Image (tube, one colour):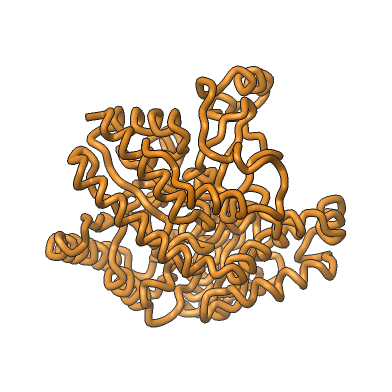
Amino acid sequence: MRPLGEAWHRRARGLFVTQPIMPIESLIPAVRTELPGPKSRELMARGALDMQSGYRALVVDDAKSRGVFLVDADGNVLLDLFANFALGALGYNHESLLRVARSEAFVRAAVNPTSTPFVTTPSWFDVLDGLARFAPAGMGKIYCVDAGGEGVEAALKVAFIAHGERRRVSAGLPKNPLELEPAEQARIMDNAGSDAVVVSFTGSFHGRGLGPLSATHSKLMHKADLPAFPWPTCEFPVSRWPLERYADENAAAEARSLAQLERVLDGHVGKVAAILVEPIQSEGGDRHASGAFFRAVQQLAAAAGAALVLDEVQTGVGITGSYWAHEQLELPRPPELMTFGKKMQMGGFFVTDALAVTQFGRMYQTRNGDRGRGMLGLATLETIEKEGLLAHVRDTGAYFLAQLEGLAARHPHMTEPRGRGFLLAFDLPSVQARDEFLKRAMRRGVFASYTGVRSVRLRPHLITSQAEVDLAIAVFDAALAELG
């Protein structure tokens, strides 16, 4: 690994002066123990009550970690390109988030939970006023829950409700289900309700609830032994990279996918409530398609009377260089629904006024909006705006991708570097090679993660600098050379 330059050290010493948590000199990647280290293993041993305890890779010292540097319980310092599966946006202990968390309003929200849609406090209206500024164009309503997958589940319910109401009205039946004949109400209560479907794509991941899992098609482990709705699936047209080299091949793949989607819609006339798709398939392996493809999907959805639901749980909140990834797709009109999660610190969806559900009791959860999480989500969006992080992500992300392309030219076993902004990935020949690469990079102080079958997933915090990209590239270069 090449040594860090003096310019990098000068920048590092001055970058976080407002957060004097620990000496900046220690925030240079340094792995002094095996991973996980002895203190981490001792702590992990206490976690047996947690059914998920076997997943743990590190124990983070969240008092000492800051910026893009993760410090673990053993004092190891890692450049964090993992960001907790893209949860992180502003790095560790960002002052704007600490300021919110120390505020009186946040403390009151934390100790005084409310059933937000029914009984709330003035602080929730402050959150809503702020979030309205960052809503996608043409989407005038929001629905908040606790996590992204839960937001997808709720968005699908909205699509089904809108679809069911339209079908009843067209059949001369009451729009309001409470006005149906008693026999029909009894049939619904006996689980013999809608035969509507959601169309999704191979390689997708939409969450762990039973509804989203029926539209998830990325890993067998997600779905085995679980019941699923018999919803149709179309092939996702995975773009090959570099895009210029594979332009004809990519266009042909998209044409095949769209033709298949047309056949599916024709085979389910009147029954398609929604087409659910990620702007970039993330858990499935960072799989891309063109804006033209998504524009055609939107057109087909409209012709079929289906809602277009864009799942932006992982692609939203600035990681692609725009607040929402679909803003780069040049859609002629807003999608009907767009889900969010992860960096927003809560889950939910934005929806157009036409599909907003207003009937009392139709859409309701006890906590449709955690006020404290909403404050942090809004502060994240406002900080992205104030610090100009969208332009930073676009510029530094393009630089990062160019450096990855340079690595691929030097190491033929690394293929298909790809991405938008800081949503980046590349492939290695096998699962084993990918996992060994990640271990070697981690031992050298860079924490990245996996996705898909054999892809390395990079999710830098939005504040990651070009100097830190250079550091990562140097580590990757060395790890790839060792793999041979």
